[in-house]
Image (tube, rainbow, N blue to C red):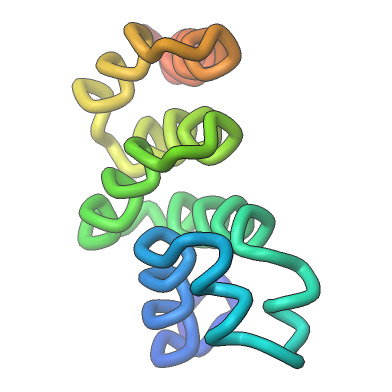
Length: 115
């Protein structure tokens, strides 16, 4: 079992869905499940935490996708995850995000990591 406490075969497909599907498509796909009740944004946020805590750069493509999410909340969380996975350069791009919260979270993540 991976260090994160999730079985890998469960983690990756759901993470992909959290970043690839619209909130409506996510709700349709997971209708009636706990994932649908929680919603795509919370699942995506939690997925970013899990992926970042693995410290495995293999997850950078998923986290990079989150950095372009329509929801500023997810882009802000992606900034921290990118830094945690070692992609400071990509996190620095979020310093120019149109949303002030995203820019602030990127700056904090970079500062805390020694930028």
